[in-house]
Length: 181
Image (cartoon, rainbow, N blue to C red; front, top):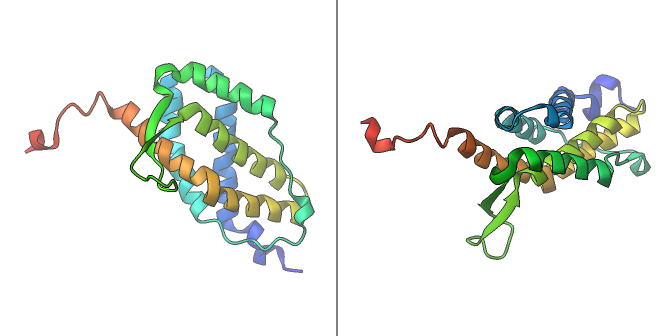
């Protein structure tokens, strides 16, 4: 058995993502207490950090596949989604190019609130499972989070980051590049 400081599930990169993921989850759980502008401002700042921390996760060799669990229920996801959708209203939907599809030039419609809720679900499950007191739980939490980053929430984070940046800066960017010179 590995020493605790040699175990990838206890590495600094996992702990750092855990901290940022927890902050994200707490904020999203309290989205109904924030304005649309506060939500967008928070998302603009935390999503790139989550992406960076997710990309730094090490490969985790899990010892017990049975220790993996999911915690966020469909009802919890629906509540978060509805709250975010009500806050974001007309700015919720956006278009992006899906490079995993057969037609890479055909825009696809996405929902900011859906993507934020999806990221929340993956990260909340990571945070909850990691809090269990066993090595196997921590290994599975980090392993699952890395897998979901690579297949699910990492891509969603990149997609919504561009849209949020646009929403926050669209009125500030009235000058064109040529106007600056």
